[in-house]
Image 1 (cartoon, one colour):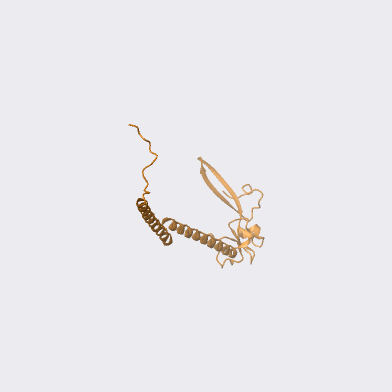
Image 2: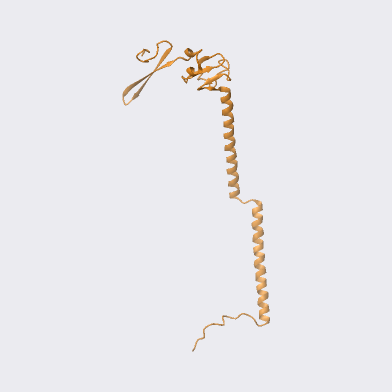
Length: 180
């Protein structure tokens, strides 16, 4: 379908390229026609006009509006220096964008690494007690055993003294008398 004034109302015919896409949906054809100004037509204009089209790249040094090289992630330096290349918004250049994203990405990776280390250390502590805790538990158990031995020894000594002086405890003296 050729690009015509009817397909792109309100736009002059020069410098336009029409993109037509046809899709099938519910067995009916839907034709979408959109008119896009070619990036090279915005050269020597403003950055804002150039970047209205997301497929364009603005080079600030020579005020050129270029097609973004989609085959590469970053535009090559032969096309435009990173410090003067703009894409998306005019106030951020690629150099600042790369530095900012690197710092933010590094901070996120560092935070994730610290969180993983903290979680792993906590799991190790909760799974197995460390040597100082084991030593303290052993000493508590030894003290408890010695205390029980001393208590049994003191009880036997007291019982001997009571027996010697006739103060040995009898069964309950207030037991009920039975009349036969």
